Amino acid sequence: MPFRLEPERTFRHALAAGADGGADSGGGAKIGLWVCSGSPLVAEIMAGSGADWLLIDTEHSPNSLESVLAQLHAVHGYPVLPVVRLPWNDVVLIKQYLDLGAQNLLIPMVNDAEQAQAAVAAVRYPPHGVRGVGSALARAARWNRIPDYLARADETISLAVQIETAEAVANVEEILAVDGVDAIFIGPSDLAASMGHLGQQEHPEVRAAVERCLAAALAAGKPAGVNAFVEATARHYIEHGARFVLVGADVAILARSSEELATRFAAPSAAQADDGGRPASY
Image (cartoon, rainbow, N blue to C red; front, side):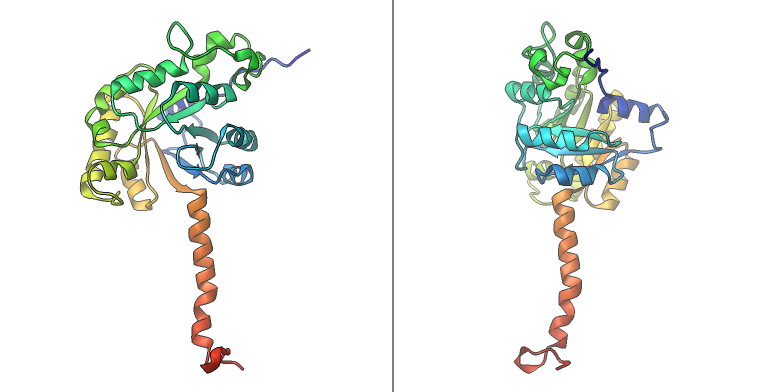
């Protein structure tokens, strides 16, 4: 007899449990880490870190459908929720990643309600959307081993859209009002660039824009998240209502930690050298 499977919980369900003070709420925001290396091995290491969620990135990282599938396999079984950020708000890409079995999607560069509605339509089957039907062929339905998948697909999917331009901030209330948008995620890097403050995520105007979006989400009763690698900034945004926060990335952790380790051991060498470049102990 073939196995009959039940859908796994989504990021939307986890955020709702946290908001309700459920057993898995942890008493605060969901803390996440980027997975940008494209490596299933690194993804599995990150999955065991104790983070609540991982963002597997395909927008700025060397990932493909095949490598994302391998990373989803690698993190499965760990108590962490994988979210996949797509490269663009595209109906074909959304269909492919959903069929692949990515349940939790983050769509970048959503600037208005119309674009948000397009993303919602892309994750839903007709008559409520335009998602192509291929469940018998797809890991999403476990090849039709999830009973009534077509009728239940919506409960298996969580959709967040990314607010990362001044235009999106201006339209944030309308974006939040779109039925089917489960959460918003604020990207201060692109937001800073769009506001004329390239590379200045800590600029007061950028922080004020982030806080405006967090306040709008609280008013709308929907969760909002933000990217913040500076600990003080992350804690500030949590205090202002951020329900999920990305606080680091695999590649950045490796880069900075390896630099710090190499520097600690390399720094004394210059002081130890005498003329001729020989160590002073010679």
